[in-house]
Length: 253
Ligand SMILES: NC(=O)C1=CN([C@@H]2O[C@H](COP(=O)(O)OP(=O)(O)OC[C@H]3O[C@@H](n4cnc5c(N)ncnc54)[C@H](OP(=O)(O)O)[C@@H]3O)[C@@H](O)[C@H]2O)C=CC1
Ligand SMILES: O=C(O)C1=N[C@H](C(=O)O)C[C@H](O)C1
Image 1 (cartoon, rainbow, N blue to C red):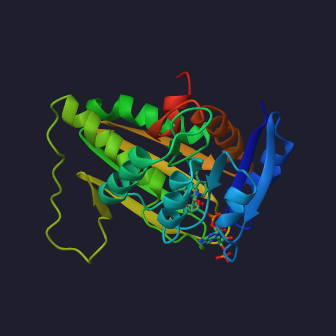
Image 2 (tube, rainbow, N blue to C red):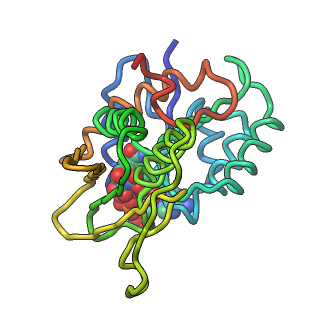
């Protein structure tokens, strides 16, 4: 069966790449490509089954409310997620009408690239062995949110792994600082955000303990690295009811 796919945010950096990827993908047809001035009604008029949402934290909720209410599955790369937003989305998904392939599914992927997903997995694995851990994310100079969705998720996963291992939160001896110098505190893990023209998306997870450090680094060098993850998400989401948070759930890791 050919999947009827729409891209919301089609003129953006990742959205324009997604348009090309969906057009070229076997078993998919690009039926709509929405920009900022498009009407969401184009999705239903085009008979979209799956919407790939790649816009902005300010517009993602409105777009997802429309998709779920109209029985359209979604694959979401847009960032800016917090518990309140996720709860709202869960409510919409529960109330959503069923689709010909079953209940509506939504995948939110903080990062679609395999290297970034593996970075998160490796960081979780290392978390319980090191006293200190900090995350540094580096992005292009047009990014709206900080810290990045990937860095936030990485820090949350590290903190959960440390908690599960019974490791206490790390101590910070800083008593004198300029605000922000120690980064954002995500569940006890400091996260630092760099914005620099010329970069795309990069992350280092730094672990330290007596006499050694471990650095896990990932670099996204082109938006094409996110496309296999998006296409996998489109194929899997139609068979996966409700909310899935993280591409790792669709991978055989
Ligand atoms: N999960 C992942 O792997 C990845 C996630 N991202 C995330 O995707 C999002 C987009 O990133 P990026 O492409 O760099 O950003 P861009 O600003 O390049 O693209 C966003 C696009 O969405 C458009 N837009 C904004 N609001 C709406 C709306 N309501 N309806 C339709 N289109 C809209 C913008 O239009 P206009 O230009 O007119 O403002 C723009 O074309 C960010 O949240 C980013 O963090 C990015 C890369 C990978
Ligand atoms: O804005 C970006 O570019 C990216 N956003 C996502 C994030 O916030 O983690 C994914 C990737 O880092 C690129």
